[in-house]
Length: 637
Image 1 (tube, rainbow, N blue to C red):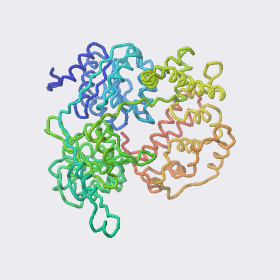
Image 2: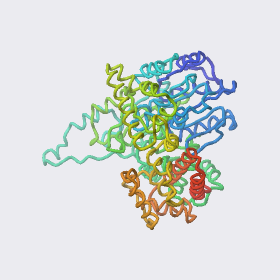
Image 3: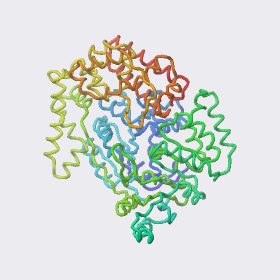
Image 4: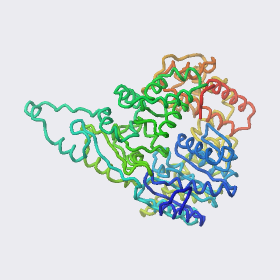
């Protein structure tokens, strides 16, 4: 079968045939094998028919990239983007959105979804994600009965189980397609300080041989960590190369270090693109440390990419890499999620990452998600993967298993949110609610493991525990939502806190500045390394603490502990300062600070959508204006 001048692989043809029969499809295939061509087929077909298609992605970066791709191909007037904080052309035929946005629309039964033919779930294996996995499950459970799904995933061993679950709860045929052959073979090697590029076994064998001098004198052998610059020099003929590091600061430092090596020749074409891209941008962008460094090293074929950069700079790096003008790009793992930027080689600075709790080895599916970026279909005959290995991290059996098998099955991470329970009560009869909850992948997997009764009782217990709390707090009375419950049913994070403050008259005790400080606390992610050079303590902050302390519900939450710190980020906004001036008060990276403000705008938008209270709408509009003025002249897409 030919499509857009390409001869499709059998697995792609099988998927398209199933789609033509109006079936849902689960595709499990290696990274870089061409899964998204199937989604593209649906979009091209249904645009011609005037039918809506939704394309969901797990991260905003991927949503933004797909929006740009589809806009270029089908025209901006036919494509929309919805990522919570950014909404463009919501009436478009093809709507690109984060999975959270779709889940919220499906849960509340948005009328617009009645006109959708297919929902594409890119990276469906995110069901495995401990924090966000339930979003994918609920998206599937609450999808309209006539909607069909295309689920795309890197190789997973239990794709059949996932497809069988969807078929069971949605009552229509689901085609499962597993494709295990990479179009470009991968060669996986390790880099050791002593042996250079070698195999894991050879490193393990060498590590077993004690150093004679240190053994005789009973001194501990000094272990030298491998150097990324030495590795790059050895593989300089295998570029473009994506070099993954799990620290943003580490990406920048390594890129700067490689830049001093003069490994690649200066490219004037890159300099011309940089000048054109930044022409007309705010002068302060040019002065940022990250911008100065990128302008210095990009013309030498070296770059870095992470979420701490401003969108305009991330876009510049992506453009240059996409054109094959960057030889080595140091990047965080975000670049491995769906973004179509394959390279000839992929390097790992380490096979350990910090997961928010502790440092741990990568899981097999994480390793292959990243490694799979090596090898460009139609360009490279083979892809190369190199993992730097510090012998102190040499866990031979675990590393052997991780790098030789992708056998990490999807396991349900389902959990009930207050928002879900409120909407179940609002939209479904009592007898339907537990039935719906028992459609979860969690219950399906438990049933297969002969724990059906246990899982059913557990789900019922979870629901009744949350409902009892909501009854007690007057969100629900006699199985009906109160005004406060109705308001809170349209909120998707920190429901109780927002419900108690903005779903009641409590918010009227605060002025606009205080309301922004409160919302800021709920958007701020506390990290030990985040520093604030100056805060702005005041009676306003003391008054907030007093009101919260007097409230029997809100006084129990520790989310408001950073109130004083938040004055460093909110008070300057009221003084008319820009993001660039506020950056001087903290060590937050510019992209992180901008994302923080965008999250505030997202929360404000949720409140406005949830209420008809004219005073609250006025206050939220005032808050929006303050933040938007702070972000003026910054490219936020």
